[in-house]
Image (cartoon, rainbow, N blue to C red; front, side, top):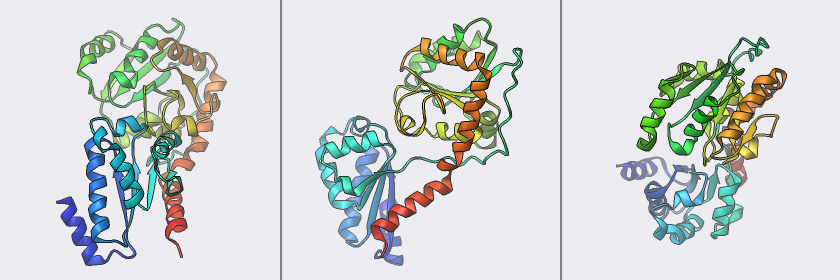
Length: 307
């Protein structure tokens, strides 16, 4: 259905000046998208075809489709005019496999949250709880169990509240997660959040925590910037390319609840530092807005296809 509809539209409106941009991910979805582009290239030789690969590691792309690895790189070179990646690490991985470097680039993700008028200052009163949030899939590889272990072992002087936003997608931790959160009245499990509800949670938070084992370009990191949150994160994916240590983020080690606990305590006991990070991130928000993203995309289009 998708292929027939695309071909029909291109025949109807013409393909000479058209740009067909595919947003792809991994495994068989990636295979399908590359084969679709190959078919379109045969039918419309003048069509400009681009692809954005929304994955942070090449091994994730080729999980279960290793047989297609070499052939797909050949097709990326022959079929596509430009290949976009979410960070430099995966771009370099594809280049090492033979992708043409001159026809590839990094285009960072963007947020669509409306910007607040300002960032509410963090109250320096010792009685005020630091508001922590996690937003994402409740999965072991998101580091949620290390996060729960970290807050369980916080200094007894740390007054906090943790809002866990997401649904359990990993059956192996379902029971343990329910048991850990159910026994702690300072943790709220909000389930899946979106739209205005999600924006309000982010805007009212002090710190976003994302201790993932691996990522591409986490959208929630950019949303945290838009909401003026301080950030605690593992150094994975494109986050390490756009965030500066101690200015925008406290980096923690993958799978390490102790470094998570220490980062939370440092922000809690150093309120001026926390507020400075919140403001720094708020000022960075416009760089990753949807308008900025479109401008950078159009700049690439102009350089590739402009007359």
